[in-house]
Image (cartoon, rainbow, N blue to C red):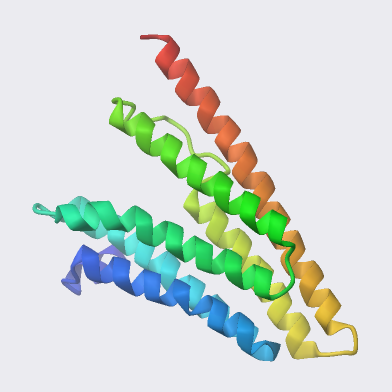
Length: 192
């Protein structure tokens, strides 16, 4: 797969833009409702593929534009905000959506600051990683889409329950991931 990505000669900035565009379309699928909710899955899949492609292309690039380095994390946060907005549109409680977004922002900011002070390799993958967030939200949309497709009188309540569980799982993993990250960073900085 890596060879196929590299053979496309796509620029990292294009991949970031494509992933952001796909993420921004997820709330549109949620607003459309019904079985269209399932359209969120390929959009999230495109975003995940773009994330992996960006990492590969950036590692192979000899002259990565500073603009891409600055806007890639912003595109990631905007994409996740779009996912959270879509969960809210489908019935997830607003407080869960806001707290989850804040925890993800704090996680990314903490990891970024740790790298700025020289902690390049923190030596662990936490529950707060982007890949974990992507899988969690995709599962939530998958369940909501299947429920909407199956129909039934109570399907709106079931969709709301499915996305609430997904948002709450995302919140808990973000909190645990942040705790893991803080422990690792604190231990690494204590040795200085």
